[in-house]
Structures are given as structure tokens and as C-alpha cells.
Image 1 (cartoon, rainbow, N blue to C red):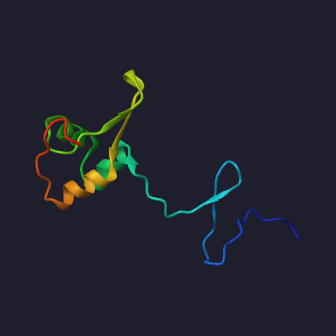
Image 2 (tube, rainbow, N blue to C red; image 1 turned 180 degrees about the vertical axis):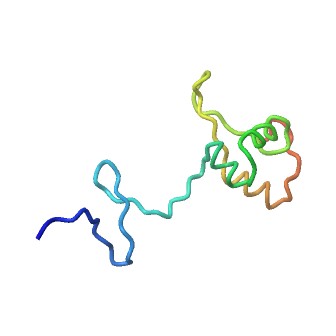
Length: 96
């Protein structure tokens, strides 16, 4: 019998997600920091719109991880969800 390129299925009927080390990770992990694309999808707007809203104080400001031009820009998921739940009020500049 030839070996087929199938992944084994767990008891719950779902195939495990493997990483580089061969370990499996749960698929229900929710990131706390979102990149601009993920944050825009959460808010249901375009990336440039979210960036413009953040710069003008309409939406929560992102955080920068790193220094200089190569710094990663991330939005806190909890802040965005709280902002949406509060009815999208105007944010004060510098407030996090």
C-alpha cells in the first residue's frame, strides 16, 4: 500500500496544525496585537482609513515595536473592541 500525504486526525475530528518544530498548536489562539491589515478587518474599514483615523484621533492609536523606520506597528485588540463597544468615540491624542 502506498503512503498517502494525509495528516492524522485528532479525536475531535480536526487535523492538528503543525509548526516548524513538529509541535502542534491550538487553532483557537487569538492574538492580542494586530497588524494594520488585521485591525482594519476587525473594524471593517480599509487600512489607510484606519491609519488616518488613528493619526487624527478618531480611532485608538497603534503602538510601535522597535525603532526607526522598520518599527512594527500594532493595534491592541482589546482597545479596538472597547472603542467599538463604546460607539466609536473620538480618542484623545496620546491616550492609550
